[in-house]
Length: 372
Ligand SMILES: Cc1ncc(COP(=O)(O)O)c(C=O)c1O
Image (cartoon, rainbow, N blue to C red):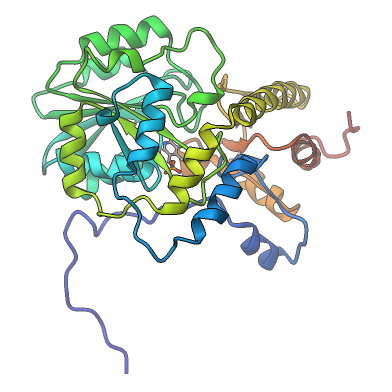
């Protein structure tokens, strides 16, 4: 007998789509009967994580019967010493995804507006919608946040602004002086969330260091993560830096044990291995430069990326190219899912993975063309 659920969901939840992650390797293997798959779809770290983090996780497993310290004080203290910000300014999340959710949960009420770029990281919009808030989107200009447009979009219901820097999916950054002027102009009753998930990859001197501004701007929130350069995506560890009174509000709505023992131990150990992170940043930059030039040889261009991914402009259906790459065992992100139908987003992999990607792409965009 077919039975149906008669309990209505909240009206805010009904129209929401489900987050579509990069296709898992196991799924592609099954679907295409392939054994060798290269996944360049989720901006993960192709070099894994620090050996110190692996050892810390194994050690911490011995205590897995014990609940973790919910506010991760040791990790907060370590970050505090590293970044020169008082420990009360930190909140540790089950990924920075969770901190985005805690911010909207605590501060967005039905009808409140949140300004964000169109296109940017999709979790801002989803979490605002969950709370009954109204996302106000401001189109990017050449893949870059239109900060002047975002200022103009501020209205009486504006509660929050998201700036993703570098922006996912375009990889672009906003200029130092533009962002500084923007921070100065956002009224202090509006929360300004700057998401720096890819901070450690940026080497451009025109990138604004936002941390020193926390003390003078109590409406400023900075988000970072251990999922990218530290290679701990599976463990879920991210953090936010913000005025301690905001931290206290978020703690009220977070799960008591949101950050698990293994994640905390791995994050702490990762901070002791600066050489690993520096090496990943260096290799990423070299591989990205090479990939951009190889794409150029195929007649393709990208937005200027400062992160560990590239948004490739194809001038044709990104979905078609995505599927053709998939059939060759290369998983990227179809731009249509990210708001750019004629693009794909590709994460920067190892030298070897990038070569497989380029050759697979060459088969599609320049069939019969000579390998370089
Ligand atoms: C811009 C941005 N912010 C936040 C996140 C979430 O990262 P995590 O929850 O793994 O810390 C991501 C993940 O891809 C991202 O691209």
